[in-house]
Amino acid sequence: MTVCEAGVKGYAKKGQLCYVCANEIMRSQQHIYYSGHRSDGKEGHIFLHMECATILSMRLIHDVMLDDNANRVVHTLRDVRNVFQLQREEE
Image 1 (cartoon, rainbow, N blue to C red):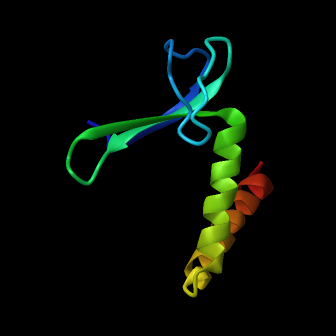
Image 2: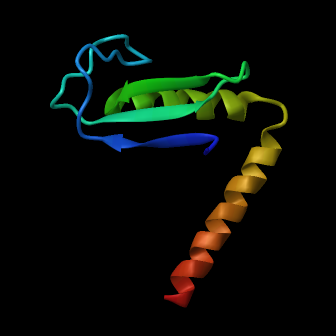
Image 3: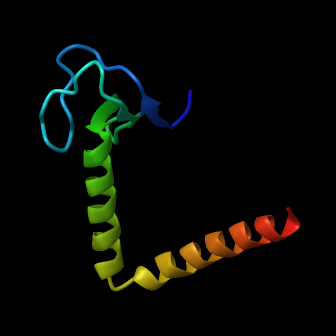
């Protein structure tokens, strides 16, 4: 069993609510879902409109970068960027 699963889906179950805005995700709307294990060991799911997922991710990044330990994150992002640059050079 995986720790988490995430992705883009092209359909939603009737009555599925967005985790961010709490509005219903219509069946025709693409949405993001996340399925993972909570700290209490139970499985949890969240569903988000594409726009709401973008807003939430920007808020999370903002909060992380405000932390005094943000240098860790900056170094990780720099490492990821370097890996992608190396991959492009090899192509």
